[in-house]
Image (cartoon, rainbow, N blue to C red; front, side, top):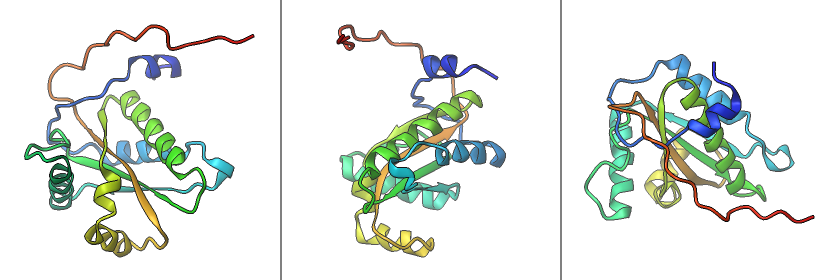
Amino acid sequence: MKNCMEVIMTRRSVKKYLFDMPKKEDIDKIIDAGLAAASGRNMQASVIVAVTNKEIRDELSRANAAIMGASADPFYGAPCVLVVLAERTAHTYVYDGSLTLGNMMLAAHELGLGSCWIHRAKEVMDQPKWQEWIKTLGLTGDYEGIGNLVIGYIDGDYPAEKERKEGRVVYVG
């Protein structure tokens, strides 16, 4: 097991995956890390939908690609998508969902899996078809898509560290 700072400092976004599904126990650990994320007033507004069904995964990919005007798979071939939704009535729902995604990216890295936060979950999930899908999952309320976290086994080398920009810290005091 790596220490927390090592996991934080070495995590990278992965953009090439094998299509082998991660072990369910690893997916569950990643989800648990997301559910443990801090949330405003402890409202726990985030919900995680684990998509391991290839047909639904591919449909989500196509919907996401259509929004960005692309034909390529925006999920980079990853077999599993963790869709983070959050209840819009919570004042901090976007931040809460973002923290959920961050925790899950770190957990995936610690488990030796690749991950990448894919945008456009809001635009996809705001479509009537996907709002109906959310209801079929038994979720009631007004949910917004915060992000899609793709996870899987890395195809190739782990991405190298990129140089960090200077001048991003200011001390006062």
